[in-house]
Length: 122
Image (tube, rainbow, N blue to C red; front, side, top):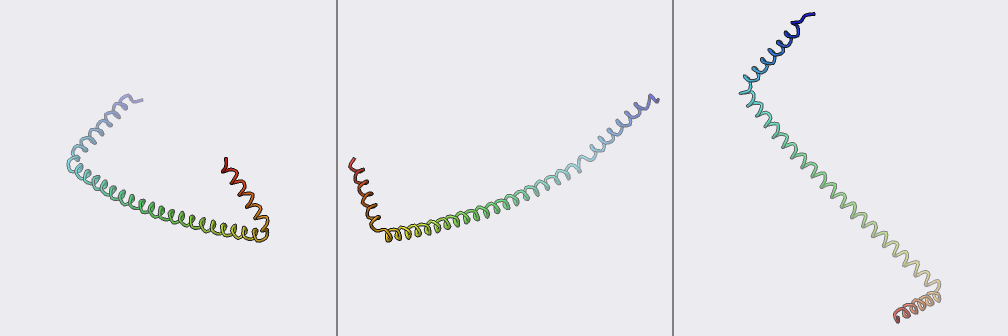
């Protein structure tokens, strides 16, 4: 067992740290300015990339919004056409029923008139 080994290792590490600290102090001047400039350029490029990304996302959202509005308008048109078809169909069925049962239709109309009249007197 060597007692001096631990002290030697500690001194070795302290020497290495001092050397790295001195190296960093000597390179801080010009290297720091160039590092700062490089970081500034990277940040500027990042800002430009983010702006382009925002434009792209905005364009995609705009196109989706337009497509969605078109789909909704198309759905309303289909619903309108469906209602018109069903309305015409119901009207045709009513006309057929009146033509097939004229006396029943007159009786129903008379009863409806009597009910409306009696309700309006109260």
